[in-house]
Image (cartoon, rainbow, N blue to C red; front, side, top):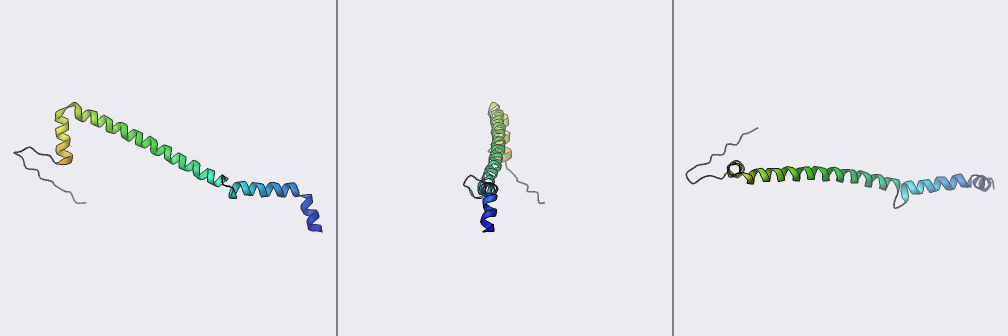
Length: 96
């Protein structure tokens, strides 16, 4: 009987505590879930910014390469080992 009287005396505090725990940990949109979603959103925005910068840099490189045939030829020789008909290409690999 004393337990029921004690519960009825603090019924609002107990209800508020149970509700708070439910919202913080067990609900589908709990505080933990929202925190994880917020961190994921931050990471995705940082990744989006990084990729946008990479796209801009690549577009600049593309414009530089296709603006001058000498630059395009140099790039092809350095990165894809293209050669002229009367040339030999030697690839030197540096070991670490």
